[in-house]
Amino acid sequence: MSEPEFLTATRSAYDAVAEEYAEAVGDAVWDDPFARAMLRAFAETVRRDGPRPVADVGCGPGRLTGRLHGLGLDAFGVDLSPEMLAIARREQPDLRFEEGSLTALDIADGELGGLVSSYSIIHTPPERLPEVFAEFHRVLAPGGHMLLLFFADTDASQLAWAFDHKVAPAYRLSIDPLAALLAEAGFAETARLVEQPPEGSERGFELGHLMAGRPA
Image 1: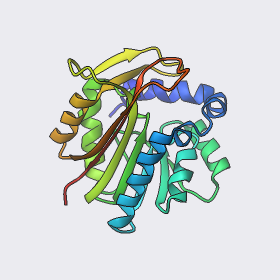
Image 2: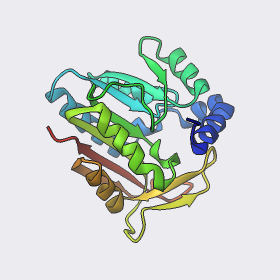
Image 3: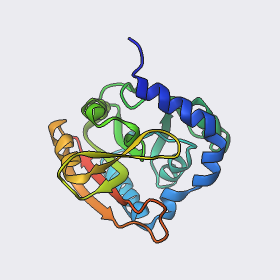
């Protein structure tokens, strides 16, 4: 079966700018105190339920994977872009990084205790999100936990709005319709946080943090 066009386009776009992107982004997610608080809560919740591996899906240069490892998780990274993975392996040589896509993870059914998707679902066309969430549900163990980070909107009139991302086509997502999609995929929402645009933000978008679990 041929690969969906949006995956090919996203891989090519990130491969072309991997080094520049990694330098520009730095450790931005961890530097955000609200994201950091949600990541700490996620890690504590996963650790409480036992020592299962955690996948950082769409890991890019792997810095968040390293942060998850520092929070006591058995974390590994997955990314579509070989060039991004090369940076991740160079910067985090003691961690595992694998090539894969959100729609086809090389992970056994129910293997994971946790999954983080940090600004990676934004490159998925909205009509393909149910496919992605079905895959996330498949790889999470019953009782496992998931944290999504994304550009958000509180307008519930539709699921997604395309915007001009510097690297690849992207969408900001409305948190209520997104939570409804997760429920349809079999997840139970645990917590949510909508962060107002950071001061000086170029785009002025809200930032969404949505945690959900696969019921035991």
